[in-house]
Image 1 (tube, rainbow, N blue to C red):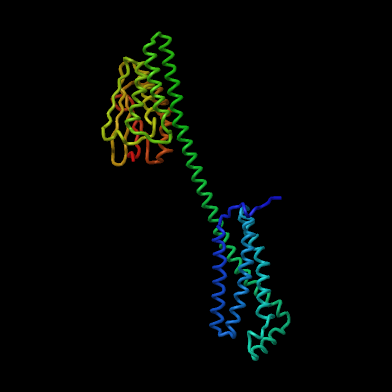
Image 2: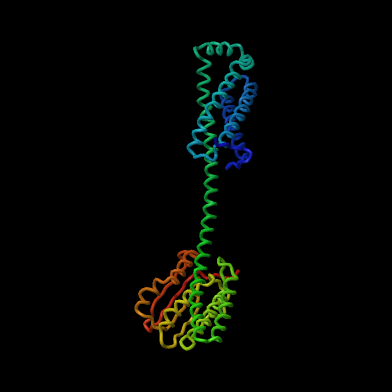
Length: 375
């Protein structure tokens, strides 16, 4: 059997709020009845008010017991809690109606009526099943009153649970987004490392120790710089371009006569923020499909510009790629897909990656993202 511990269970609606709602409901009830008695010019209004307060105190106590009962079922489905509220309100309403009948009809009725009214009251009470009818009628009205409070409590409880679920969902969504960003960020490094190690192996096999040593040093600098930062944090554009220059220095060892590089970064854009290693797949793509497939020198250029509230980063090459490269690798490659996914995860529809082949030849990857300042 499942057990519930009120002391350890944190209610979705605080106890103070529940008590204030109970007191508010019953205070409203007392005020309405008192005003009705005053307008109807009932006799002995002072004595009736005292007895009314006594009945109200009992009602508050029973409603609080109903609150404790509902707390026991807070982790159940809403339909179960509604059924519990309706079932629990029935005995509460009957108990209040019986006590109310006793206070106003059985206990010292002479204090409430003068002789003339007392005689009328006796005749009225002598009717068949008067007590039962009075209690049943009062029970019905009390039931709807109590169930109104229970409905308010369930609504507050359900709203609180919805807010809690929404907050948890938001945290989970943020955690999933962070995990996705980390995953996409780290997809870059193994792919790059694989290509670099292949190049290093080729240099060793060709007995080119100086070039191999230079590549190892540059590779060490690249990873020391790129892995020291948080993959969820943005980096300054100058730092991102510096990393790409390290990468290009590594590739220059492979292609000493074919690879040329240019950077065009305005000084005022050095401190704008970009996702770390966002350019690396684009530069690598230019190496793989521009330089590697060309038999002549190829220039890879990295440039930056501002258009309105957006930063435009461009990686271009003037190489000559094969037809197969044009139709598959460059348009649907893993590297470009990685960049698109990172942009969408980080900026949504505010960022995009556009690729095209100029009429003069080569390949251009143009990255547009919101302009972020280093605060």
